[in-house]
Amino acid sequence: MKRIFLFLFLISSSVLLSQTVLTSYAIDLKNKIRESDIMTGENTVTHDVFLFAASADSLSILKYNSALFLRDKFVTNRQYTQNRSLMGYSFSEDGNPTLYWFSKEDKSIILIKYYLENKTSRALKFQIPLEENSLITNYQRDNNFYLLMKDRTKEALIAFIFKNGMAEQKFLDFSAFKFIDQKNQPKTFHQILFENPIELMGSGEYNPLYKVTAKSKIYTLPNRLILTLDQNFRKTQLFDIDLENLEIKEKTFLKPVGDKNPKTSNSYYHENKLYQINLNADELLLDIKDYGSGESIKSFAVSKKDTIRFSNSPLLMQIEDREPRKLKNTAKFLKALSSLDAGVSVYKNDKNLFITLGGSGRDFNTVSINGFNFSDPFGDFPSNNYYNVETNYSVFFESIWTKKLEPTQETHEPFATDKIFYFLDSHREAVLPNSVKLSNYTILTYYDIVAKQLVLRKFTDGFN
Image 1 (cartoon, helix red, strand yellow):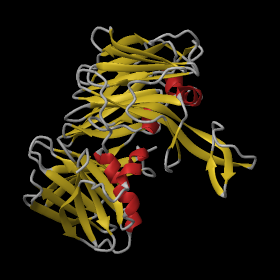
Image 2 (image 1 turned 135 degrees about the vertical axis):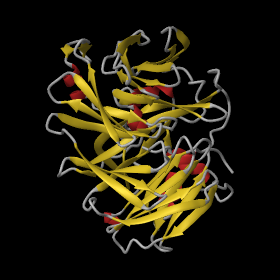
Image 3 (image 1 turned 90 degrees about the vertical axis):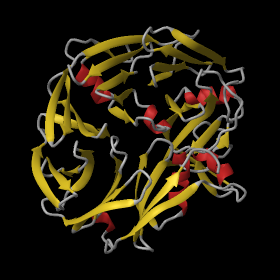
């Protein structure tokens, strides 16, 4: 689910969304959009920005400096990469990019380093051990490319780190640790991850509600991983993983306890703090703990009769991507949220912390009111005309805090990601979208099928 509720205000003609075309580049993908890939990345050492545009038969590499002026380009054929998708990128110490071309059928990655100075390339093939491992996710960090896999038989994760054209394997052994499920029954590490697949949290980005409701989340830090497990109502089991010496440290954070048993719970790690929620239809508990000491920094308890005083938005229910509807009171909100997978997301920009608290789920009851069909999971809208249609929905509210964890009365302003979603929803000519977050703004790259050009647009948080 997107943070669509802000669009109620953004759609107004009196509001101007901050969006600036930085540059464009003419290219014809020859109506083969499905066979094309676009990816944008920043060299975090030089701060050069690279645009990789792969058509069915060619690859264009555009190199921009930090001011987004085109400094170099390399156009080449798709030798060795036919019928492969662009999976990721990395940058070597000499500043040149390596692209990773994936084939699910061949179970392999073709690594190609492109030398812009003399317009040559060098290819290597990496066979992914998918017979013994399942692929969890891939990501870029500090100019390196990472593959994270789960061993199919052993109690372990496998990390492959691609750096300067070399692949280094890291075996992360979890066999010494104990795990329990929601019913406090012992489970293996493999069973926990099978029942609760790992979701990758974007570093320095706003992670939307549908992602943060995952019970198993992984956070990327320099040479480290943080793995949190929240399948149990009583505790968050956290593992601090050192990718250099392979040391894994377990930390346990007890969740806040209310008068009645919780129905749903979760946590979110952000800048050495753990945000934990535990709730049922009668009470919402939010606890913020210091990562180092495990001590509680802030605690909030809200009953169904209370007003949520740290909310900066209405209590909202959203059906698919339609306009959200206000829930009448805290009791309605907690009743709805207690039946969902709950989650909390924390995002920081230059001014504040933004906390989204809510839950998401699916429903099969659809009602018709005045000829308009929409899901009504919680019975807020009377009707007798029901039929079965699967519908995604969420309930949530949003809160703005200072960086010292003090709630504010500020009004929500849109994030760059909100504006990007809105732009793409209203500009059907923009296809193959890809975005990269820089220090204080986000670049959206897309192909304009009408103008036949690659476009880089700048989006920032807040109103213009």
